[in-house]
Image (cartoon, rainbow, N blue to C red; front, side):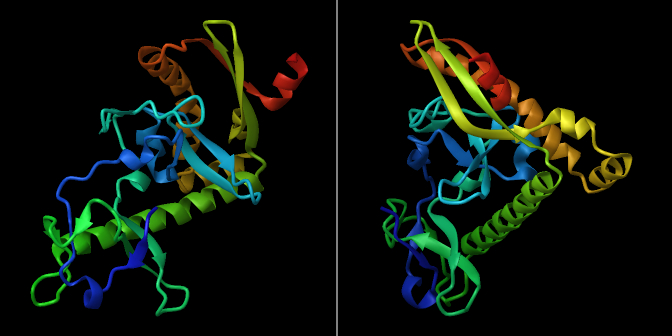
Length: 254
């Protein structure tokens, strides 16, 4: 269980982190957060979709790492095999958290129970004179970029919702043995509605760079075939076919 606490010179003057850190914590995750700013690069490896938080109507932007819960097809022998790694999983053992000493302020936090943290590790968080080390400064900058990207992604999703550009889809998976499975609760962008945007809206989206993440997400759905290929290389339970259908069409076909 992670134990994140704000990084403080008073408590962590002698704390260090390992020079090499693995990402085994995502071994059982079939989806991971990905920011809209990462779509262009991430779309070369993963299907990018939206999912809803179970306790709210809020959408999350994620990359699919597998075809079922608990399946990560991009982590093999503790090594990441995809062309890119979403920033959300590369920050171990750090995260952003609320500063208990400053209201509504985020600060760098560290998992003090992580195997990569300890006074006997390699990279110091603070210099001997108490100044923040280059390592900690770079971590803070990276966490700042992550926060900015998350806010931008939230605004991007809000823009899609306000223009009614989201649609629910499902993945109908047929296994080689004949069994059928279905992945539901997945959302993407409705390409037909994008094409139907008014000229003024198209110009507005173009000026704000919104078409880059839009078409990156749409193109990324072809990476479902990559998931099938990776699954069939690593599992005895082979997949023979996957169909991606809007929920309305899937309901009509059943």
